[in-house]
Length: 284
Image (cartoon, rainbow, N blue to C red; front, side, top):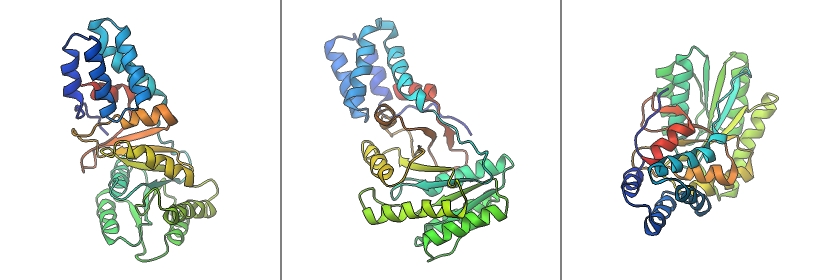
């Protein structure tokens, strides 16, 4: 898995600001730019204060170091010591859950692991078709049953992963709005059912966030985490137009673990989250 050093949407603006004299007006504009990139007011204020204290030639470095200080504690890696390691993917419609599962399945299969995928989005045929293609490309084993109860399929899928001796098994779930209590309850039931099929499962419950979602991502995390314990997030769709700063807001406010970032549709377009590289990319 590779990491991209491609600027976010604010990179060019920040470069332009740091080419100026860092007077009061420029620092105020810097703060506005950071807030516009979905960095919270509190975090943006702390970052600008660090820039103000720095020597002019070290201002950009001060901003990057401030971001790293916020983000570094949130770097996280998936530990797959459980056999099988079970990973549930959650998120709103269109966040990138299914594609992210496909990318991870392809990566772990390439590493020689035996991978299973359980298609618990049972009422969206396109999701199953997408997972079928990823399973074909990666050699992963797919468990699917169109139109069936998602929780029942999750239970059977976990039992299947145990009997087949999978190294890792992914559970795709239907996209659901974070303010829909009925759908959130169904999501929590899926997670509980997996635990009934295997003590200690799921190993991870991860929330996939759309990189272009901005401050909505904060609300999604808060809504989902009220329904089920969230072990961390994956930021998908972080292309060159994304703002990216919402991850700093999540880190500052909730200390949430960040496992991967993704952009593009290819199997290699996913990388472990690295605070240094991410901050470099954000400040341009």
